[in-house]
Image 1 (tube, one colour):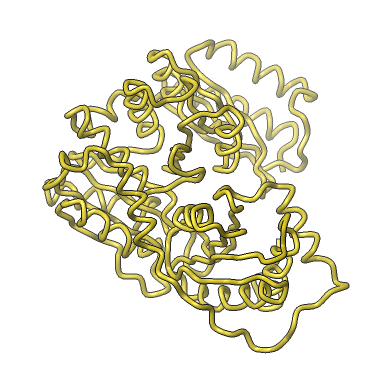
Image 2 (tube, one colour):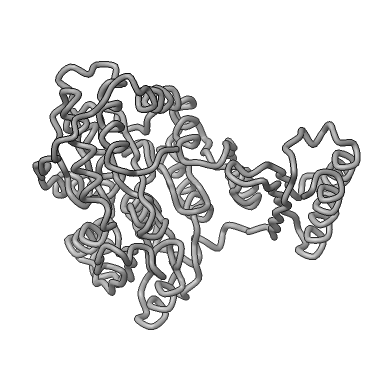
Length: 430
């Protein structure tokens, strides 16, 4: 909503402290990814927070989930991450975690925005002082290592790693080498501008090629701030979050560690995940796109596992936010415990063909109130029956209607999606 200029960042730091339930004696830890803008944003944010009476410490370059972990375990009032995740280096953003290690609620976010917008108070204009830096990495990595109960079984495995030139560039190689894995690493030479540049979880082709070239047991690619992980099996095939959730759900259930016999996924997860879970006697709880909605459902239902197709997976027994390193530990754990290759485990997800069409619209109306569109959609849903899924939703940021169809036959669903798109263009298209 606001530009990341000096005044706004200072005001945000001050407003964040004012919005805390208990601002007296507030303590804040800040972490950032490798973008060149992270340093000055950290200084200015800390300056504003100190103005409101907080004590601030920097964890330096560290992953988003590490900050969530530290906020909870080290007793901080809030944790702040300066990152734009998988976006290019020109972008940056600010994420906030509560003292419980969970992302701020929408109510608190709105309160902070309201305080920032209030022009009846000002922040000081004096130069921002440096922020004291503390190395928390070992306590966080100790926590991540504890997740892997089959550590002896994976020693000597060859692993390809892509750190996206981001926040895991030091953490991931260090963790895996301490576990005795042999590594081939790419995307671990950040220069402030190469974060996510042709590498990382949004560009996994390089990782897949490295796995094939080196004969690795598997490969893992993180995103810029380290909260996502996408994998490549031993053949170089990409393994996304849906397959990871299915294999880990099966393993956790076998060990009696899957609370509620259900997991949470967004509306974008493939129908194959839902049907695969059903075969295991497990339920799938659908939620809107966004990791915070996954977290909210996990908390509300007291469940162990949830996530997104993009590789943002939450294992709530360890942390209430996605953590690429913990996801990697769980995949290694599942492989070691079952004695199976990643290709075999991932192959249990039967992916239904999917089509996604975007239609530009001049207005956002309830489609059920437009009879020609509603009629076409009803017809498609009848033809899909229980062997497919239709999801139609407006974009949150653009004048677009997104039409997603899943079914047994690619040509069939392509044709049906176009039927809907054609009627939408006719009725409300631009």
